[in-house]
Image 1 (cartoon, rainbow, N blue to C red):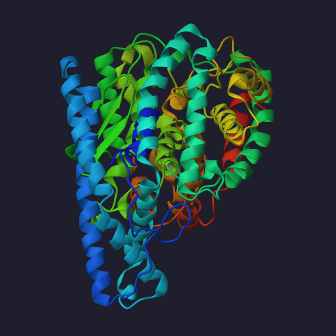
Image 2 (tube, one colour):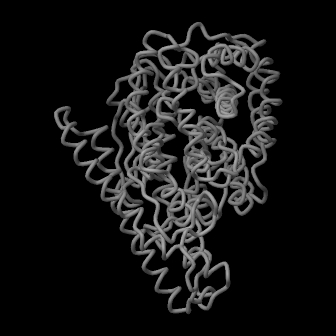
Image 3 (cartoon, rainbow, N blue to C red):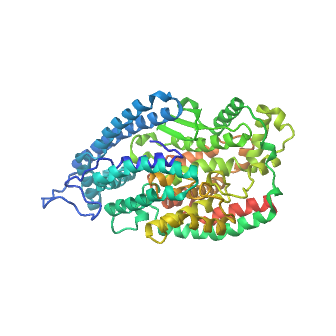
Length: 558
């Protein structure tokens, strides 16, 4: 029920599914795909049986969704409102709720009914025609999730939970000391655990494919290799050409200065409102790390953070989270509480935040919309700033680009590809944990033309691996590519879209996204299939590369 840019939250989402797990007799083993039920008489279900089974499953899933919304709300409160003294009691509350959710997610009756539905639909049993595409998607995703959940032994799940805390503490100390060796033993444990987890779920599959499914349904390592090879071949020379122009080619001086935090917050609220965020069903606050939390589509909460010397930090963060929030507010309430109404994947969710942050907010038409608002809120700082100057300032390519979260839309994908390649190597055994700093430095030189000065600004900069999260990083760049392709499809369908953006009229774009992305939820089994439905083709990296070449070629005079 929540979508946040936080790897520890992503780890909890994956880990909570496996806490205190049990094998349930009568449910197909995720390892073999063969029922563990002893020889039994199979009775063909009737149409009434299938309808009743589906209604019962839907009720159980909706109850889980409601409880997940409560858990999401507790997380939001902890990060935004909770007094420091409440941490111990909050931990007890979340633990108790996690136990209740676990029991419901591994309910034996739920497993039996899901198996009955899956087999009935596959066999074309009486009543199967009465379950429409949305109901079938519910069964597909709920069955798969249940099978993955019950596949993990209790002892392994407990090891995951314990190691997450230990590894995070070690990562913090290692990063502070800029010493990879302090964290390496814990990463090795995560590599071993992830391999074991993947084997329990599906021993016949590529372990990375199994782990990737937690974050990007329907994606495979083979497809990622295909996508990232094309992106790598296109971006490395583009980055080199931009670097050759020098740092002075574009200036961002006009967005730097002294900007009152309260005034920045008011500006962000105005822009979020203009984009279409409904504050009657949401709110905007401040937190250390910007995130979006959605206990329900009618209750969507987002945060941002501000820098007093950089007005774009808070604004682009707010626009990014507004994109996530618009996705949640646009979900189809006809199927409220069911898997089919939820976002298809982390990559698709990220596509909506990046569509608004990059395709819209970093565009030249948006600069025309934004300059008058900046002059309204900060008249002294922006009195002489033009839309062209603002557009250039918002699109400076960072050099050197050491830190992923501080990079730009040109260099960012190479940060992701580097991490993906290391994760793949670690799981395949072709990269040793002790060698990660050297491999990291080599790839940074090859891809970005820089060498990290130390481990803290290199292989220890992200917390993801401390949470055992493998397969999460690719979703960031998949989101950027999805966003580019989706925006181009919207532009084809909406005459004069750029003029509307320049005029601050975002209603048509929001409505198109509601109809072609948000309301579809998880109806399709993969991002490629959703892209086929929404844009006419599966994900095409060439669209992303052409966009970057055209935009930055013009900005940097290439």
